[in-house]
Image (cartoon, rainbow, N blue to C red):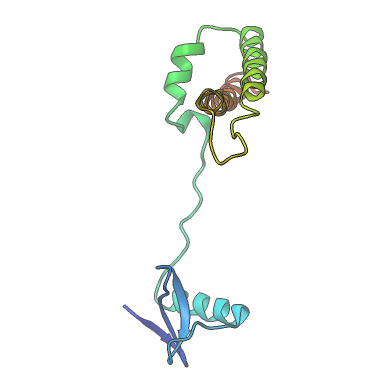
Length: 137
């Protein structure tokens, strides 16, 4: 399906992205004009942005896992778990500082520590979301 607007044609470019092109095949250069034209064309053809939905941590797929792991703990225990995770993250980040050896290679032990620090960081963020959702602060 091609949408035309005056001398422009809405089609895929070489990066497989939608863009406005002139009839001779050159990509449109005026970003402001292209945006105005594309907005009008999308509205004319009935395309609309999806409405934002209310998203809470209870709708997150990890909520059930967090509830099974930490559901019986009180706020002080969960706060201590967050502090422990922060310390573990710092420890793993320290071990991962020299992951690249400067000659184009990697040290696999440090790479594992770097990935572990990322995983612990994700767990800490989820736990913080869980605590704020459960206790309201």
